Image (cartoon, rainbow, N blue to C red; front, side, top):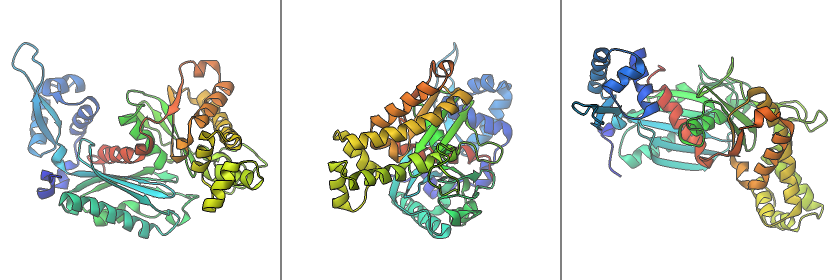
Length: 409
């Protein structure tokens, strides 16, 4: 692949910290596509002279570029302005409980290089993030460029994140990560980069908002079902974090006060009852009880079962597997009904690894939600799988990077 101009001519990072009107110009172009100076003046309610002066400085700094001519309104056709894609590289990092996905993109969010591999998030954060940094280095090597060309990094992690400092607070799946300075660690490897960190389901919601079925929607929920269960909340087109960054931790809503103890220490949480490990555990029990020939054969072959195995069994018509999936779907739908009654979203999108086990899960979630939520809150509600699927997290990480590339130090 051809090298980007950014590879040989890194932009001075100090030029990327924008003044409010400059940031508003970038946001307007990012939200609407290429705009003329007149369009920007009307959109931002500033004089054309003011906008023209600021745009001139931004073009000179390499932040904006003229990308062609727009439609004439009776006079000369105006030049259109867009974000300069060759300003540098941005990186999206989607860290899951058992995998990591890393993508290199330009400043318009187009993925240029990508790599994914299995990983165990329960170990030491410095070792894990060192591997992530090495993966980013490998992607840069494919482009023939250095670490100084990375201008922004967006990271999603599977745990509660205090957004401003970008640190995890009491993460159940990864206790060694609590308080670890993720931003500082990555800045040491990529000195020109501004780094933003958020919860993994929040970046999935962000990805769906920018490039998926949520594009154009103002208020929706994104439910991730994987090793855990979480919810990203989009309000007025923006991710809602709550007072301390803990909004959306629906996996620890209780669905059975007499249920098993969750890794958070409480009993009967939705996550311990309905997420991937719970589906796999119920499948093993049914296989060992002789209630599923398919699951018993898969268990004998592999020595273990996963939610994917249950999905395969369900697709083959296995009765026990379908019952297991419906049981999880009903519990998730019951919690979702409460959220729908409370928030009244336009849509709910379902993502995460377990969402790939088939439409029996989606059907069960829909049925339970519609049965328990009020008629008014569900009158126009869409409940469907994420259009981005496995790509939601890494795309969301890229957009997290882009949104913060010009605003955080």
